[in-house]
Image (cartoon, rainbow, N blue to C red; front, side):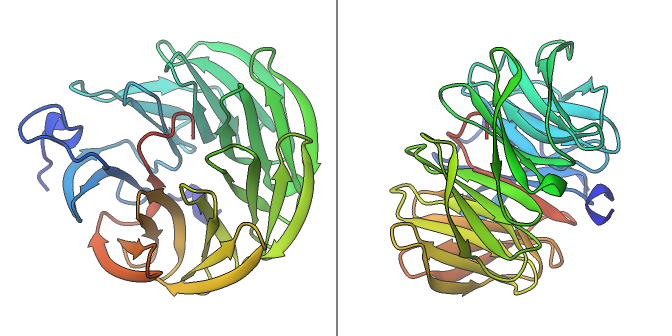
Length: 313
């Protein structure tokens, strides 16, 4: 599978904002799968780089600022802590999707080929529990109540897991090949990007039912929600664009051109950042004008963009 393919480097302290110049209030982390690197973007430029093991894919953070990254081929998770060298936790499965508890005690790891989610200790890597899900669990999102949402790509559904008991409490049907998930900041809605059916499933998190399915562009792959919950942003791999959807009307209101084959997307204040796989850069979108304002070069194969302040996602 293409997505399982997967210099001199600045000091780790600089990359994590623990030494030297003060860190930006709104840094953005970019995971480059082929380049095996984690880049920190501040003030429109790459301010730090951390080399990783081969083929990192997904990323999550906790309230302490620790970062976690999965390596499906290496069956491992890398832990990056401010002021410390990265450490590696082995995982008994093909680690793909990832979420972290806000306190950083537990990691929830989707086993791509094992159709399950593992809860592991972030300190030791010990497996603390498992939950069965659908085929090829992709992205994971954890809400403030401790419910974990899992995009089961080849089962056309989202599994909902009670992380306290590690049991599946609900299954919500979606479009074809659900891959990316985004919770609205108020956590009232979960948005699911369905890659093959070209649409977005909107799930009511109170009822755990799909309340709408709307067109979302050509091969929607990444999804994010702006801070006031008014708009949803969806990357379209086959259109080199981001589709902007009005969250109230559930209608497309704009399309923003970005780099070729966009994948992950994150919102930080008035800006959105988009990882462009084929051009090895990150597009910056001004959310007021809905225009791309800059491209920032990163290592080969940027895939995931992680915003601060979103523990578990």
